[in-house]
Length: 148
Image 1: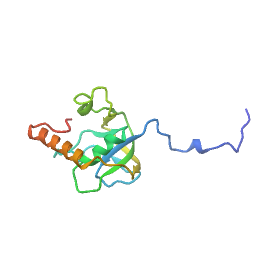
Image 2: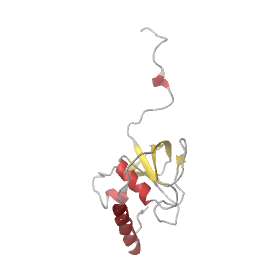
Image 3: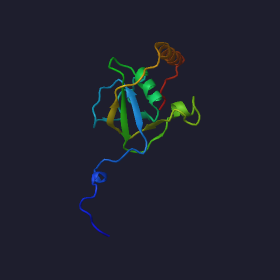
Image 4: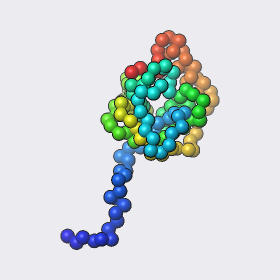
């Protein structure tokens, strides 16, 4: 076999192409290269440290994540790459959406921020209010949005 020195070496870089695109919606101000890790306060009302972090393969679910996250920061959607195994998010797939149509997952391993989606369309204010009211109703019943 001939060893051609002019071969395209772009495929030899340290970066790997996505086999799946994943998103993380939040109000946290992160930079490319940062890691999203467990052990921080939850985006969704719990006053305890997170055991899992969450990601989704659908932009719509990430938008909901950004819109429902607590805090005063700007809503953000990051492209993330898992650094370890992920599993179906039982908060959604077992309770609300059997079969995981929202393509929502969780992990105990960090996610690396590899990009940010800067142009996306929010849900209507009425939809967001209805969702927040529903979550508040669950909270009043002692049901947390995220159950580890």
